[in-house]
Image (cartoon, rainbow, N blue to C red):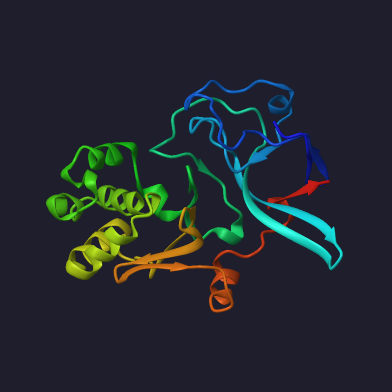
Amino acid sequence: MHTSSYRWLNRTIPRYCGVSGSTQPADSLPLRDDGFARGYQTHATWHSSRLAPDRVVSVVDGMMTPFGRHETKSIGVLWEQAPTSQDPRVAYPEARLPPEWSALCLISHSPHIIWNREHRLVRIVSRQAWKALMESPCKGGDPRPFASELTSDSELAAAWLLFCLSGGQRCLWNGVAEHSAELLQVIWCRAFGAEPPEKVWAYIQDMHGHRLVSVAPQGWSDLEQNRESAAVYSEHFPVPGDEWRVDVIH
């Protein structure tokens, strides 16, 4: 366990919950130490996908340097009370995201994936649809062997879209967009109904870097945070308000 302290809404958080690179079993029982009993724990990783956090937060580490104050921002997860071990509603833990990040359907911080429980696409998908997708010829990703089912069932269509985003399936998505553009358009419209969005957004951190991702029937786009993408980041991934910020105390 880390011994540093953190502050959230003027309340001191005793320490992080969870350890990067944990050797705990994937589905270990909830921890019941004093930190968990008090709640207010935060970290980007935790022992079990069965212990879904209450919210995703921005963790800010500010330090004074010879050149002035320097801030490092990272994504963390926060439990406001002791969690109860339970299966995810569908496949991955779901949590509240800052309202400023409402456009994001998920945040992927390898090896963990958190779905935005308020996002339209996430709310469409059911456990039954995900199970059907995993048991279908589409389990490998290619939607063509399962095209008739995907294009006739909105929950299955939405499950396939989330499957691609959750797995970072950029090559698969762009391959379908290039060779079966009409099929991808039909899956997209079936998932969302009469008023489909222009794009769906996610934030992914993996071996390829940290980036905003947008998907649409026309293709998959990765946007690293730089001067060229500053406007997009300020719109879809801005600095959240104080209720969604945890500060490191040195």
